[in-house]
Length: 155
Length: 155
DNA sequence: GGGTAGTTGCGAACCGTTGGCAACTACTGC
DNA sequence: GCAGTAGTTGCCAACGGTTCGCAACTACCC
Image (tube, rainbow over all chains, first blue to last red; front, side, top):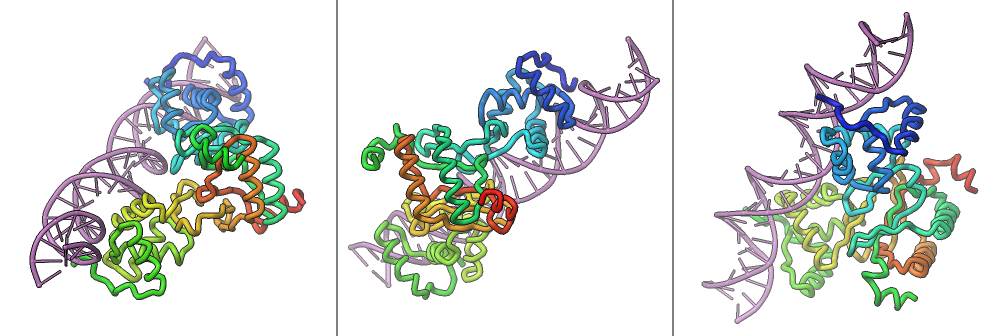
């Protein structure tokens, strides 16, 4: 009884079908579920993704989620970063064109303003000749809610 | 036969003595060795630090290195970041006032220009009210040597 | 110099991750 | 619509990094 689950009927399922066909991967329930989960979550740890998957397809194993993330990463569909300390966080590459601000106190994740990101990238490239990989850029610190005093000082 | 090693006679040993006394921690050989190793390495993974320690004090166990890093982190002497994907990297806080550029190809680590860092911090703070923790900021990408074409394009 | 409590080393346990293998199924061609 | 093939999966064991428990030891205070 492998790969037995309700068919993927979501609207998003269509785009995955085309995407997977384009890169030569089969459309399997676990694979589509992982993509759906990533799309819904935005970004998530392996266990988050697995949990989201098993809610709709309980038979999908953790190993498979790991393998899917690896396979999809190899094919450029998924990328990973380290939003939380020591934790690999996965996301769709379509979601990886911006950096994240990660609050160390409350764990909140905010997307970094594109203008700031672009300027930072340009400056780093100009000064160090270093090409910033924004899909992997995570900025740790404290958000406005967790560091009100500092925000006032800095303001 | 615990804690048997050559006494810490390095010049740096003096500053550690004062530092540890100030924060109420005992001066033990393993602890001083870890501090010396961090000072010498700049930043390093647990195994790097452990290796550096055992070269001078072979009896120091890996567990102790872990515990020291944890203890020293709690006391604000050490901080950690993630220079290499999925790898916790430790450093002295005195060494943590700058961000790192990490090349994903060759693994080279470059210290980010202070001016760029300061401007980035100010912009992020102003726009998002987010206080950047530079000791934890690692920027992934490709260095000049590993991405010559891109550097030309960007230039 | 003696007493106390912080610190250590050892080894087991723990957790996230990876790999092997047989079973299963998505896709292709007819 | 059906059979064949190969990609994919689930199960389970293994692996490596990290943490924990405990008895022994020693740095520090008096």
